[in-house]
Length: 340
Ligand SMILES: [Zn+2]
Image 1: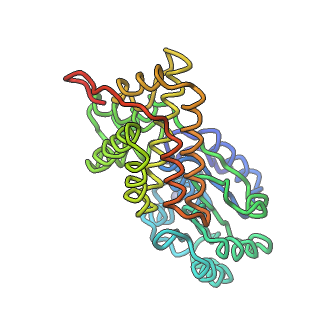
Image 2: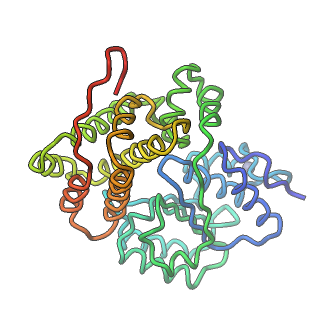
């Protein structure tokens, strides 16, 4: 009897691991899964472990993490496991067609051909249409793993043909433990990064290894807070500036969502721990001076704009509308010694 739960190399998401392990034990694996959840939450790591469990050579536990198949998959060198993601901004129909040619062939060395289609929320309508055919007529010994930050804009027919695995944010202490124990980050730094990550281990690990991640975060929050005191003209100027690079904008909007969620929490309760705790001073002013309805309006505007990014909507126009939907207020600077 093979144990499928033992060695998934992933932090958190235990219920999802158990779910897949149970399906593997019962030989009831579906041919397509849609793994969704916020950026940096561990979707690709989950998919890679899933691919390892499918092709691991161990007779006792899968994935074992040490056999040749597991090692090759971890390094993205396994002949039967491919990761495909958008070139530039979006996943294109040509990439799906190239994939279909591959899928018509038998696995080379593994039991299954596994294709991980990363960031499928960026797929063009043509690419989604093309993939639909593959989902409708699954080839034997093929497993498709789609990952998506959001499933809102996926064709309903794609969603209905995939088994959904919706990954949730991890508890902050678990992210902190991961940073300290597996990445040897000092406790104080680990605590800060874990909190700022809002439960996204991938983001926290990236931020620990790359100073520019935190630098960008500060810059994006400053742009948001500056925007609040700006006139219409100023906001139009900012819209032009930040709508140039969609990928950056996507990350920025994700951060802004967490900011407005913090403001909402603060307006509703005094005890909820917030994500952007280094901006506590500014958030507290927003929570006390801005009506809850207007905070909600700002949050909805950011969410709506993030969704539009993956649709054929004029980016600059939608960012202009977003910025005009933000409340107008001048924030007092933080007292010396405090950030934000
Ligand atoms: Zn193995």
